[in-house]
Image (tube, rainbow, N blue to C red):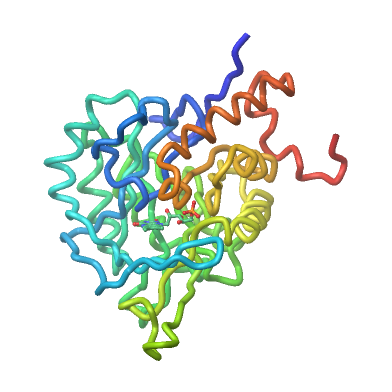
Length: 313
Ligand SMILES: Cc1cc2nc3c(=O)[nH]c(=O)nc-3n(C[C@H](O)[C@H](O)[C@H](O)COP(=O)(O)O)c2cc1C
């Protein structure tokens, strides 16, 4: 008998968000899913999360925007994207022909931006859900990230919730001292699920040039270097909310993914790992399947949060 890997990420939403399996691509690391990827059958993915999308097209930050660090990558792409109108016109019609759900990641500078984006994307064929990136600077609040405080995170979530009937995932930032409080606040404001973590703020210095490496000075750290931090935050958040938690941050192998699931994640996202190994998301999926077979586990849900008590096997 084959194992059941399906997962419902929006159980309280009338539309639901049912995935065949728990493996998704992380926003900003897999484009729009429409790019040619030889040897990669995107139909096998649980879902695709597209690039961060803003109201207007954006060119992003000055170069250089990507630098490798020990066990990770620092990026300051700055949300380069085609803008929501082009996404609706050019990308959504392609997605509408796919079985695999596509979730659009949205980013704004004001609460109104997020609401407008959600409104525009509501009811568009080919879009199965929204992922709200609250790691963006809130222009009205002097540039603090929306996701650093429970109140401002809840404000964005409530505005998006009001503007759309689509399943709403809220993507949490690790750049706060209260991620569990933020998670509880967005759950209370109508999020169907939370995903975490986004990148951790960091920087690198070019000692010969005596200046920061990145054109934007600071960037966001991702990759294996952040995995223990991400795992801990997933563990914390899974204890603070009743809605599904999606784990992300440094997942490179199936073993990494299973750690997140055992910590309480119902699904996972693979990002930076795809830069070294474009097949990483599918390798992770196949490894989860093998693990379940070997351990005699029929349904993935049996594994979710299984390591949350000290008891163990
Ligand atoms: C180049 C790059 C671009 C990213 N762009 C976005 C984005 O537009 N929106 C977003 O919510 N997260 C974005 N992220 C964050 C990832 O989706 C993910 O949360 C983070 O990289 C941690 O996962 P990883 O270690 O598996 O990459 C980006 C990450 C990278 C490396």
